[in-house]
Structure formats: C-alpha cells, structure tokens
Length: 258
Image (cartoon, rainbow, N blue to C red):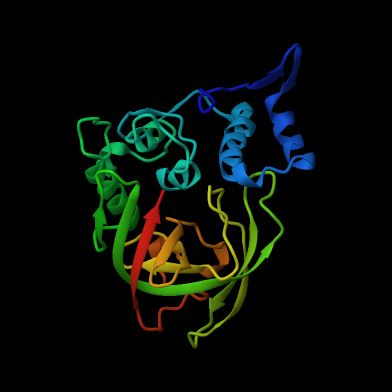
C-alpha cells in the first residue's frame, strides 16, 4: 500500500503530519540503530510518494510502479519478514522496473522456495555462477570467479536522509594496485557498507557486488551495485579506466544470507 500511495499522512491520535515532512524530521532526534535498515526502506517509499506516477507500462505492456530495478529492491527489503517466504520476492515485482517474465520470476506459489531463490540469484549474478539453495533456509551459497575492483577505505558518517551512505573506495590503478580514491554513494540498502568491504565483479554478472570477508568465505552485503560514474563499467564493460582487469581472477565462496 505504501509503495502505491501518492500521498502518505502519519497520524497519532488527533495529530497528523505529512509523510514527507515526517521522514525529513525522523533522523534528527531518534536513534534506531537496531531497526535502521527496515526504517530506511519504509521512509524511502513514503518520501517518494508525492513524486510517484500512478503506474507505468513496460515493453511487454505489463503494469508496474517502476520504483527501482529488482536487484535494488531486493537489497532494500530482503530483511523484512513475510508469512509466505515467496512474497519476499513476489511482493517486489509490482514495484520493480524489470520484467518478471524475462527474469523467470512470475508469481507461482507452488514453486519450491529453493528453486525460486536459485532463479533469482541467476537473474542477478548471471549463469556462470554455481550455487546451492535450501528449502528451509533463506540463504544461498554461491561459487564464482571474478575480479576485485576496489575496497571501501572510508565511510563518511551514517546513512543520510535518503538512506544512502557516502563512502570512499580505493580503486585499482592501471598497475592493479589499490591507489585511486573514488567518492561513492551506493543505493539504499538494508545492509550498510563498512570499511574493508570489497567490491567485486563476478564473471557473467552485469553489475558489481559488495562482499565482506569472513573467516573462510565472503558474505554478500549488496548483491548488485551501480559503481561511481567516473570509474567506467559503461555498457557492462569492466575494461575502463578506474576498474582495470589486469589482476588475476579470484575464486569466490559467497554466502547470501537473508
């Protein structure tokens, strides 16, 4: 309902306030670290309601709200709970600017959860990864080959009013060393980026992924991200200044745990 609304009003008893104004004032006095990811994803929808068209039609004549690509919506909302786990994907399709037919993700509640999550991973990361999903777990274990493109060297403050962080990425120069500092504001996500997080590009993936080193594997922080405009990656290429590919590829063991 919030995603489709074009005007949101917040009420408490007889008092009410415009939803956009409420979201602007929310970060000023309240500390909500334990729920920050969920709150950011909700206030994002409330703030955008006054600018939202009723709906759009995509190339297949499908009606959608067209709020964000599915990859970004998944990153924002995968920590939310659902009575039926399938709805953690299906509920986002009407908000997505992607075509669920192309993604192979048309709503089908008879489909197994592990099969659905597997199709989602392949849509987001491409066909070259191998994976294992589980019927009773909201988790995928993914194996893939790719390159490390950069490392988060600094985080400037907390997430801003748009739920987005400002970070500095140490990107690789033409010699393959992490020397080039790039300012970057990644899209809003349930998980915040931390110093030391790596930006990698898996073979077959259209966009990079933010990962975090664990003891013997990497956890996925953001499944797909749009890199800074000045680092290249235009037209899906990573052979651009700022993200060179002269370093050797790495084998990655990734865990995407919702």
